Length: 263
Image (cartoon, rainbow, N blue to C red; front, side):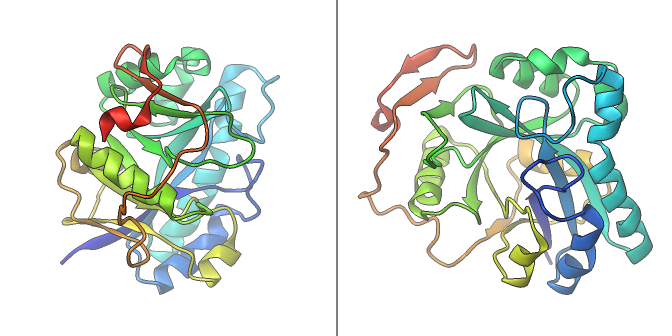
């Protein structure tokens, strides 16, 4: 038996681009057979709707409202809701962070100014994990593709909002070359995405009791599969990257600008 989780979801409380409250998702996902969701609102340097003029502790409290509202509704409906976030660097590359909580955030204001490397090492030291989200996305607002080879524990190889499925195929191939596990998520912003069945997810062999269980699953490489459209992640060799590319190491230093160096 396997258990299906949404690993990439935004709420209107904390993500400026989201249209739905966390509570609005619960019944929809439950009815589709999902075991739970992980709320990953846009963090401090991303498309957050929480004012950066707030003192850090107040910012964190406001940021966590979307998750907390979803969790409370999940408890009422007997549906699991876990906490994470999505951080953005230079407006280009995004990372899903799992395993840390509100209490930890309140005590670590330095999270506002982390580099990719500082983020990874701090999260790992605290018992969490980092997954690079949609690494090959090439939307109009993105200036370059950044592949953070040494600062992630896994790669999101299935993202339901990628406009071109080649982005997912490239991400899957990239993860294989690095020997990293893959996840999938919907990048959910609106309940209409659920109604239209544009939903992806990640399977685990065991039911998650806490977000730490998901971290352990990722870091041990024991994800049992991903729920995506058939053929979505199949690499065919004709996929292209039109944007400039930076491939970075564990120190967040650029090691090459040739993405096919990893092919």
